[in-house]
Image 1 (cartoon, rainbow, N blue to C red):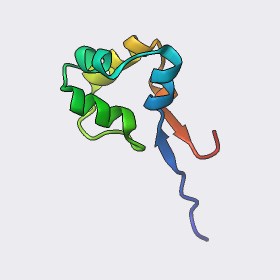
Image 2 (image 1 turned 180 degrees about the horizontal axis):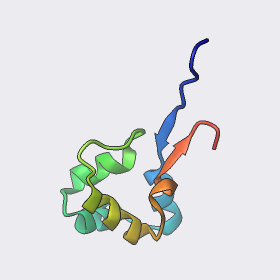
Image 3 (image 1 turned 30 degrees about the vertical axis):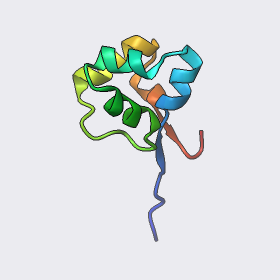
Image 4 (image 1 turned 90 degrees about the horizontal axis):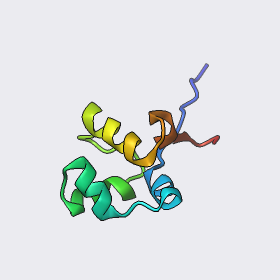
Length: 75
């Protein structure tokens, strides 16, 4: 029997649009360059280098839970 593979997607772009958060604001809060913030925003997967501290700041900025940033193909 073959295991089902769950597809997981990074949902930051949608949450930023919903909360009207700019790439500049994201960069400032996460203390990263605008280029890195843009990569985080446009990524389809959880960005490498996103540590606990950055995830916490991100959730505070977007007023969300970590699970809100991750979606599956079934969502």
